[in-house]
Length: 197
Image (cartoon, rainbow, N blue to C red; front, top):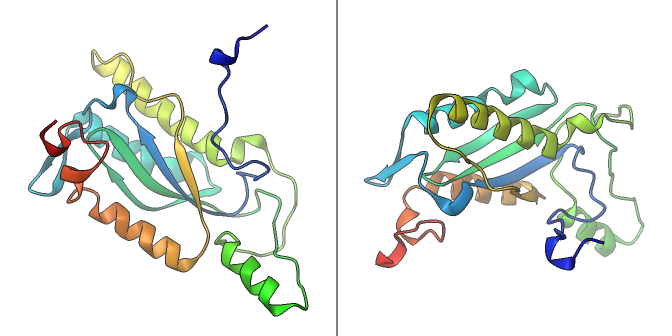
């Protein structure tokens, strides 16, 4: 019998198909929040060798996962933010049901995820075409290079955070948040030197 202490609760949205078309804002943190990827200098991120590998592995995602595309991203000293786009015919499409009640339909559209390429297509997908599989491949690529070329033992935390981007306004806000991340580093909760602590 497994004790409750060792059970891990999923931080994913229950019932959501993470192979569905859409935009996903992901954050991946370094194990123990160590600054492994570089430094913030005058409000700009200065990548070190490991940081450049993180950037390269992220940019290589579409070559390894043709159903995935990339949007805004930033490599920070001890974490990574990026917008991952799942496109093409990969998941079950979740169309908002058509209703005659305009207020219900309007509310449903507000909370419906932002989709890319909503053309009709097959409803089945391979499990390897999910957000999780893309992030897993990205983390493995970075970790393999780091283990082969440095003395660093552990790079990433076990999991990652994601947010399903639901509309254009949210997409624009997320892009701006990513762009502003280096200049906001002094107040960032991921910054171990925040407020002089």
